[in-house]
Image (cartoon, rainbow, N blue to C red; front, side, top):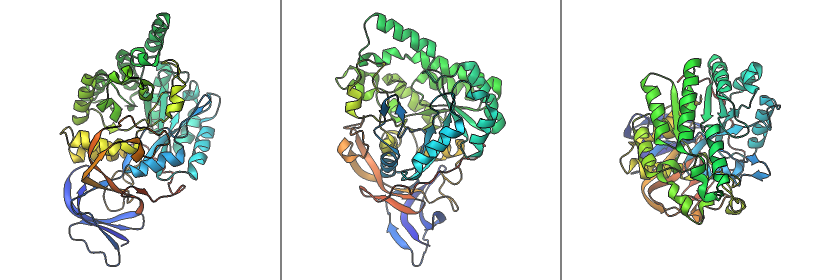
Length: 454
């Protein structure tokens, strides 16, 4: 054995038990009480939790939009992930336009990450209008280990609902998952036109410009398309209680519909758009109401939503400040580093989630849905030794100065945390320890996904 974590509480997706964890090379070798490992490095983790490394299944690092590039590139994004107990991220390969082959955009994205990534990573493949018809390219993408597609119901790269239905049929045949950004384009367009006509275009009108009904109606239509295709579907960044309820209703009927939400939709409200720094809180979909917060927590606790991810898409305050209206302010916020401690402090500590539930929504479920399980998302012999030593007694007040995003701010500034990652191990290697990043660029590996069995 190479490493023995001794005296901690091991948290799996099923239970919490006092046990030691032995690691050999990059894999977990054994779990159990009173393990012996002669010659191994021993770390005393008495009174602390040993968690599987979190998986942030929705990030955007080094993403260009027009003339802008996100503040966090593959290095800084995955460095901050390691510092927050996230050992795998899933980013996106996005074609420059519908004429670019999917495999070309995928190859370019893999090349960008290869020498920069500090943690392991997978990719979702963005599909643009017309590309849902190209069965050979879709098949090649899946064969290269990218087993999930991403589409939008709004923005310039949107697909029509009928086109999404065609992609769902293709994905079903390939054993892949379609993930969807759900905001109805007609509703969003009409609302923008109404606001522009009234001269109400300041960033403060962001939430008004993208109403809850836009999300709810898009989710309902995408669920209908998935039902007709007989295919599973995954709804990203659910921001409304109504959207979560639509997913819950479909699941109650036995449909394979999966939902993801984000910490900011659980913990922040649209009141932030009334503040002078409202631009810092612009993301799509926007922040909603306190009732939506509560509804999302209830659906997460009840199993109607399966994943909490961050949609990390960071811009600096200077980049944000260039926006003059809700439609030209860069949309996105940093979040990967604070994912795990926020969900523990405001989910587990406040009684919304149990520790095993937290492990499910942060590790096991995304690993299963995106073909990374059982290599990732599991604490068991044979799985990658992606581990977090989590100290439930450590008190932290979140401030930008203590975090690692190149954006230089956090939307959770001032939030009090009870519990924080003490150490992060990536495939048995210590990459973060008590506030210090110990990893290096290029140590992260692309983890090919297997076709989903969920």
